[in-house]
Image (cartoon, rainbow, N blue to C red; front, side):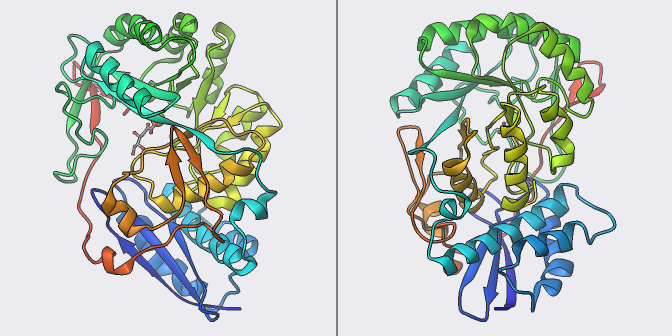
Length: 408
Ligand code: KDG
Ligand code: MG
């Protein structure tokens, strides 16, 4: 069996999804997602200029060797751009493997460990009242877990992942007005004074049974993060995400020494080498990698297995920039993983998105039911794809009030 060609498409409804289609001499094709939010053209170029010409003629069934060829065979290894490109190839090769076997991917991993995977939604509010309304609307839709982000009083911008105005409902992650980032102003003291009580109010609002998650988005210093994690213990968070930037992993010990609040980290990690020490030292409770930029199913599965040895559960990244293809890959891992925790789920549930990526995966009552179709169980409609093209966008940058650049 041979790979005969591959194509990359960029675009989608309100997103620049990077979709890879790998064709074979047996008429079977596989699909992968290489979307790297606001840097979409870069994995696409790496695929087109280097990886696809090398793929032609390879046997698609040898997904492990192909992964090693690109990762180990490169002198300059890793990084989000390369790993997103390898990730897309790897997903597509597993898709082909599943289609050849006539089995959904979770069967090739070891079968189902559960019926349905719990997902969490993003509730967000310009102020606490607005946030509570947003939380309630998700609970009414059947969600059992919500990530809550809230505007901070007296802060010039609302804060991470919060619309500036009440009920604005805008895309709060990507600004599609161009590649020059907007500036958000951040004040950790104001955040630390406000947020523990705000989270306690959300707990009172929802009662004991709803899972509450909160994302600090790398904004605190280790000592501040330790104090915050301790202060929010009575809320019983399901997790506290990215309390500090994870480059200095030793600093996470401070949080552990002061608090039992569960910590979730990893959405910006690209390989097992970014998180093996965190996992082995049991400094986190949830690993947040994404199959897209952690090198696909082959490499993510290795991370999940290492995490399982250390009581660490999965909580794969599922921001709106992930296409239904990588969400399907994660759904198959979620169905199998003995140490599954929860799945972030924000794919646009729109008719336009469903038309571009037809599938039988079902999201209902806050649970994701994986499809039993062979392979990934998602298709890609190339006629629909012609409706979309690349639109430049950017994340904001964050500065302190005196102008100091801070962590986004
Ligand atoms: O592109 C950046 C987003 O993926 C990120 O801001 C989302 O932190 C995020 C999350 O937890 O989904
Ligand atoms: Mg996050």
